[in-house]
Image (cartoon, rainbow, N blue to C red; front, side, top):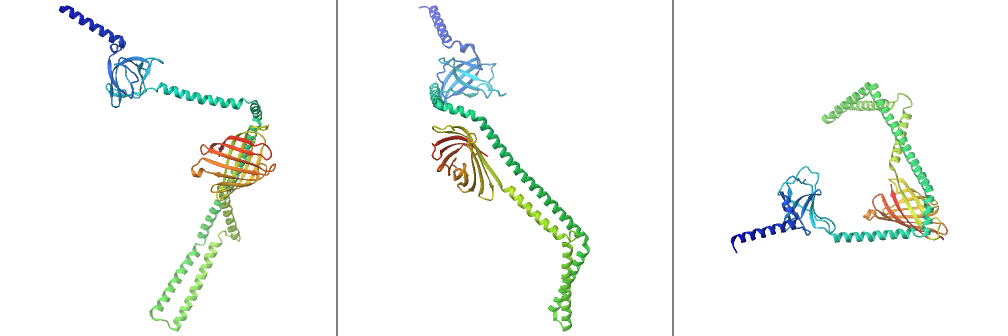
Length: 454
């Protein structure tokens, strides 16, 4: 074998190897050149050397190498030098289809800062296909069960008939709701009127106090001379008393001196009496006439009245609840949707209050007007309950960080009726409830609904 033959064979084998590499990689390594980036993935997901790299859906590079590191897999990719990658871009391993080969996909972000060549990046791997199928299977099961419940709910002809009746009663239900809202608005108007009266009384009190201040200023100015003279007399009196007691301390007193001392004391007493009369006359007659006492009485009465009104307005406390409910029972024609309205009016400094309720406003109303008493664990009430004499109690567990409350009512209707209700408070305002209603000799009812507290 001569030398020329050996050289030709080596060139031939090199061409075959080069062609194989081009065939395997599709020529990706040779089509692209430019900047290299290292990307860290937790899993390579079957990515191979030469796999294309797409930037915003356009092939712009290829995978050059893969190597294992303790943190995962480092994928070195070559991208065209004209391609710039924003720092908030996402780098993922995807496929060209459901059964396509893995490829590198770069979704560019909107940042104005770009990744420098050679900088290590962090990539994301797509969710496992089997996990997606399992999750989809679970969701389909839940969806199937939901449609099964709907079929059970609306498949019964009797339920369809009740639903139709409920829709027929919907206009009446809306009218009852509007009436209730108008009544609530009227109650708000009464409270606002009470506040307006309170403000008028406070204004009158302020004017009276202003007038009193002006009168006191006038009294002081008009009686300035008398007040000054009285104060001078008092100072002179104190000076004489001081000299008298000083004489006692020094050497005692003779009979004449004693009589003079007694006379001085008598004059001092008269001076004090005159001063008291002058001050009483000056400060008592601040109105300038005989109606001073009547003015003072009116002022005191105004102050007391304003205080009572302000205290009453500030202590009024009102709360309530609106509920949409659906009642179902066998053999009853009153099944359907209705509304409950509850209003509790009381005072902040008193545990007593007035409970007003309307049950089934869209399907025959049952009023409640009862006296309520607030306790540490809830409240109790008695009076007119659901249209008859009765009583009830509420146990609220939210103070113990349990979002539940339970209530029970009994009223003297058809030999004695009762209802038990449990509420789940989703948040401080909204929640759902279930009620078991035993209306005397009639068939029992199951009631579910949604409530809102204000």
